[in-house]
Image (cartoon, rainbow, N blue to C red):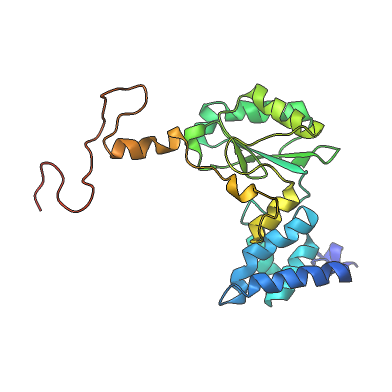
Length: 252
């Protein structure tokens, strides 16, 4: 009777090839050295192995466990809890469509449905050419730009089904695509390495992060008692005191 028939776990995953293991171990040592407790480096290490294979494989889980003196079960529990760690290979461009409440109401569900049909793949699947994978994701913290699509975690705001389909077509064709905000796109594996904590080596990329746009700053302007563009003289709240003192109508 085999282990499979008994319902026992498979034998431990194979290790990385020697040269890959040596390279990743050097990177892992740098990441672990940044933390007082080695196990605190688990999230960056998971991004590191994802940068190697495009997903967190059983081999990657074994590597992380060995580096941090954890069990593979402990590493697996973390890797399966956070959705940014993929359990199957991502495409060169991983497209995430927000289907949380506001994005869904404004068209996110339709965008996601039409993209699946357009690409001929389902949720968490990848096109045959390996170029595009797609996933419905929860809130991107960008509700002021809904509906939002992300490619390798860079924002594409105010999308429509047509603009989203044009976006993936341009990516597959190799045409330059620029996010609405943030640095220009790189591949999914390169993005994972940056998320692990290593610098973006592309010249000028760190200067492309941008800043908050008008929708993001509207609340701050209202809190300061300013009028929003297109609403001259209209104020929703009174200005707050700059420093110290008391608000109008109140006592110290």
